Length: 318
Image (cartoon, rainbow, N blue to C red; front, side, top):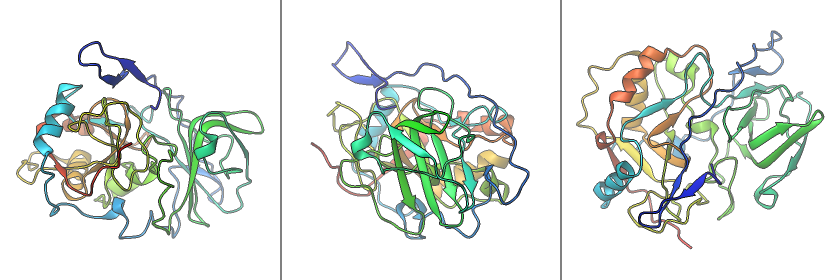
């Protein structure tokens, strides 16, 4: 939500507009041919980045940030103060993704806003790929043979290709980052896909990576592995892009069950990375009709005070 900022008269802050997100169209049925592209399809033998990548690094023993209390107080003072699963609704909510074979034809990409910070096309993204609902209109595709990730922000199919505000591609076998100061399909310059809660991994019993989270007010700064900011706020208590948070070890998870418990275990072990401006404490998952909304609803009882900020490096500022 790079441009979803409105002035707040008190204190001169800028906060993200948190209007209700309209649901997207129902996700298409997976292509029946197992060799073709499919929503929520298999990844083949592809890793989702190397084991030592920041997304895949456990932080349950990492030191607490010295300003953790101040940052959490700032977050809760500028938006909601409880965790929220931003996925579910019979597949209507969340960010969709597709996987495709290496034979998937390339399509042209025309960039309309951040072309100078985008990886040039073409991208092998099917024209029928599902689009996230709301204003961000993310589109994500994984080439499961080449192990390459393709992501678009504010994407619109044109009949023969795509128009998008920005886009980025990622080698899923590499730890390479975007150039310093560059955005991606996400405001923080991060890949989106590795931070999604995916149904297949939850069904398998565990999530072994950090999750993507948004906050209403972020800082004009970023922490590696993020590479970009999207705010004019300079208050050091505001969370920079790429900030890492985790569920406190003393938070009692014993009463949580099913899908919600698996998400909370991941938040305690791997935490979450600030990736975009949006509603407070919204954790992103894949759009998938198999989510159990009643089960995921348990997450809404978890307060922001159950988290702490982890120190992962100094912020980069203008």
